[in-house]
Image (tube, rainbow, N blue to C red; front, top):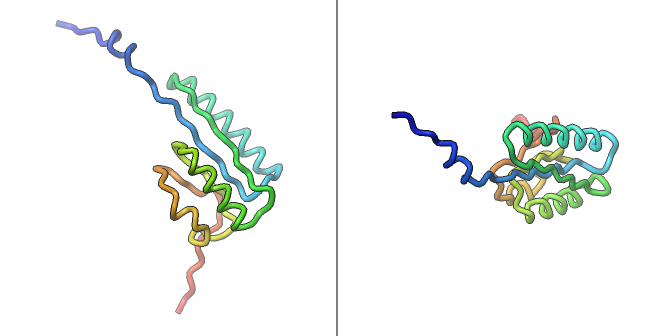
Length: 117
């Protein structure tokens, strides 16, 4: 006996996704990252049938305090993920440690420097 699950699937509510990009600062390079992320969000949304939104929260200037503020603002909106281009080593950005987000990833080559003893 074959069961058709199509009617059950119609009643399943699909959850939309929202991500936030926090670059070092407002800059033409970061604008290109935003454009690419929005394009990919549209494609993904079409493929899986949900809305995928990318918010862009760029500090006005590159600085740890400014980026921490932007990260705190981003986290307060409870997104599904945050992509950050850190102005300093991730350990220097206190907001990174305090954000309770399932996915917070760096898209920069900035890495923590370890001293050699």
